[in-house]
Image (tube, rainbow, N blue to C red; front, side):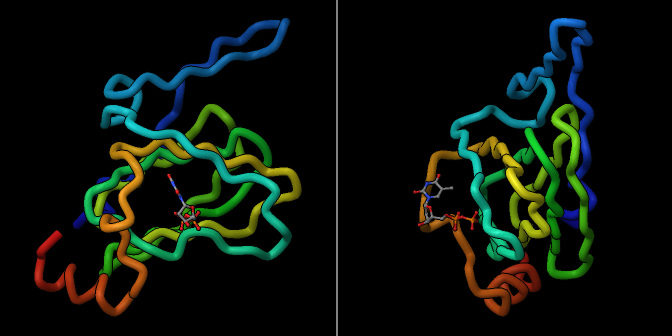
Amino acid sequence: MELDKSEIIQLPKIFDKRGNLSIIEGVNHIPFKIERTYWIYDVPGGEIRGGHAYKQNQEFIVALSGSFDVGLDDGRVRKTYSLNRSYYGLYVPKGTWRQMQNFSTNSLALILASIRFDPDDYIYDYAIFTKIIKEKTI
Ligand code: TYD
């Protein structure tokens, strides 16, 4: 089950009285090579982002600032993770339906992705997602 592969990963934190520092190296701290980085910000209260799955893309999501929840669903099991520290991130395996919600004011979501943007990698229809899962074609 893909959701078994999802996990919160604790990142290195270099404590310093001048200000702390954290690090993400692809393949080393997260289980894929980083091909793309994007971030989500200025989210109006109550908005929901995501609401889709990727066929191949894997992601690593960090709340660089503020907090939000990430709901994952592999077509069988659902799990919600709350992110609220910049030195923890959530690994999202491929083939996982994901939704992001409950963004706090001024929150900043950093997302590292394993492939470059490809509209054909998206599944936007939940019924199609569950059908694909049942047929085990992703
Ligand atoms: P989308 O992935 O649907 O955002 P979210 O899942 O957070 O709601 O992307 C929103 C729009 O941005 C969509 O038109 C595609 C575009 N986009 C890119 O062009 N490149 C990217 O790397 C990403 C993530 C999105």
